[in-house]
Length: 334
Ligand code: AQP
Image (cartoon, rainbow, N blue to C red):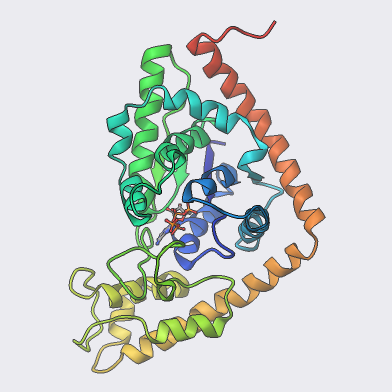
């Protein structure tokens, strides 16, 4: 089976609905047809600035538990923690050394996040984030990478680096394809529907947390920013708030956006649309949260799953890293 790899950062005590719909739903759908690797990218989590060791450890387990609660089967897919597989940091170094400074400077996530943090507060890890992400992917001979739209540019860089390495040192890496979902590639903030829903947004009312109390999310949805036009239409340019709600509804209910537009035809139906989305989100959240709580109640069992995952991941990653070490000319240890 061809391989897929994807991951999320343990930077919050819960994933948001954008992570779930933009990435995880696809992971679950793909795990039957691909040999899948799902990684909690804790090395990446250090790029956001200072985080307490307790928070990082807790969030790493919580993130892994959410993968499983969201439908990843650790018996068929490999679920692991990035720092348990040292090959990620090792390959990232080599990729850093074939990436141009200007090329890395053009990454929009770096530009956005370094500006958000006040410019000088950004660390060097944030700058080299895309090359670590490329290492994550290339280490598994990954054919496809299921991610949200925000990761498209990083994926393109990964492909460029794989091609460049292969051209310079001989065929070593598989060049991966992005696998970005059509409707839910970018779930928007509820308070600023032209920006993506995000873990690190300043206004937390824009994000729906999977593990929050359902009533907190219902409240956020009821006050989601829309427009003054009063008619439910799918027009992401003119009506980004309504378009976002329609996309979320469609993804959770399985109905098409067109059918929903018909269903909410008429005046003053914004309240009804918001109420129905709130019900769908609540229905999604309840069993999800219960399952996460069960998994977290037995951390030793969860850690054993992650241990097994790391062992399997290393079996693959160590072979690919050795190929890359050999290709660049590192002297094999006698
Ligand atoms: N709003 C979104 N819509 C669709 N997909 C999204 N993803 C993130 N936000 C949306 C996808 O979720 C996966 C996990 O990404 P991550 O943990 O690396 O976090 P991120 O990409 O940095 O985005 P976050 O979660 O919102 O965090 P911040 O605020 O730090 O940027 C990826 O596949 C991503 O595409």
